[in-house]
Image (cartoon, rainbow, N blue to C red):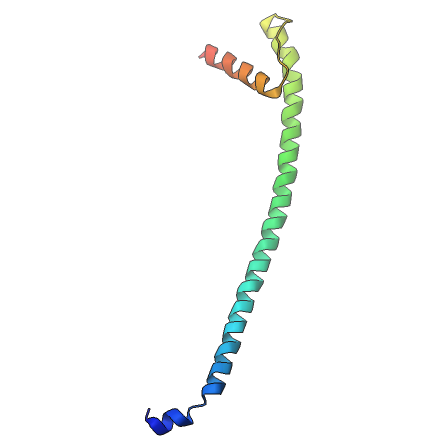
Length: 98
């Protein structure tokens, strides 16, 4: 392109079109990011519900396990006050059994 061609080139129009294209691209990425965020938030809510249900189920099992352990161990003096102590006691029983 010669000097006359460069002078005649519609530079302003070119940059306006380029800017519009970049804005469209940015909007597309933003739309995709928003959709992904919404999907992840929905997934998170479902996982939080599932976690809560699992924790409740674990707590019920732990509460049923204490009387069973007392029967099996033929001890009434098992001193367990927390879930962590119960977990450690069970782990110790399993380890001894191996």
